Length: 357
Image (tube, rainbow, N blue to C red; front, side, top):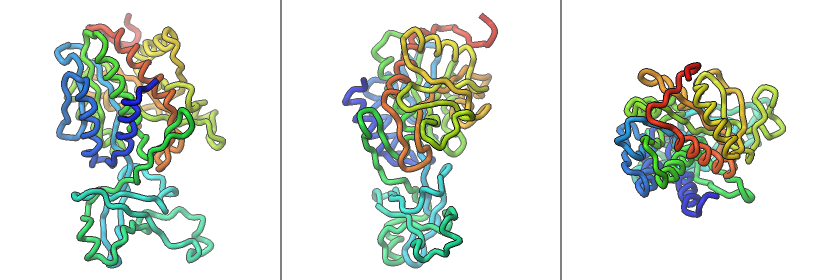
């Protein structure tokens, strides 16, 4: 079970606001937590935060979970004092109207709401159409442009309002679960490993700008040059009525982390993970990769320098890329245990070349 201290860190992390490219607040929280147990902690120029155990060991393991989130950015202030915006990352446009947001200004968070024309004033033919973002605006209560400009600047990032909540005994809901829950798994795995004797080095990385093209994983992996890398990200839960299992697999909340098989997943590493899960009686769920390759930090870690043996660990997630993503803490606990038990058995000089014993 996760400790109360760990759960408090998770809540704090999810209550941070940091759209891709603007992860400063999240990085500070992550850095402070890792500093309690990692031998070395630093944030690089891109914004990735790295905690290190046993840095001098030549054999390196990298854990990566991205702590950026999808959001918006102010691009125009109208005469009426309304803010027009663009998306940062892949936004589900259907969920945007009526969303409460926070503009992250130099002076602090400014509360706002995303508004649109009332349905009563919308023509019948347009009511069922998805509204383009350019036809929406953020209302911060300013009476005119001059007043708004005293509060907000062009380019200010915008995040969905923090909304963390416990749902039932095991489930949690929040904006930005993708992928702060993965970054949390990385931090907790590093914390657990800090209590054990290991003769390899472990780098736990909270990566940035994943939603803009896996950018933080590219720079951090190049700098670390790991022998093996584990990316932790959310994966699609298919346990709701409208998702076709015959094409996306059978993945449920609370039944364990997801182990995928795709071109991003090294066969030797996959075998070690599955054998460890069986030996330690850790529940896992298996699926074919959503894509043949790409989509998570795994692919960038794998293709860095001369290549890295990689595997993706997934946390089942409902309602991905909406303000109300839901995950299950039992899957989180399983992922942490699986990673810890796998990493402590890795040995210096171990190779992961497929087909060669």
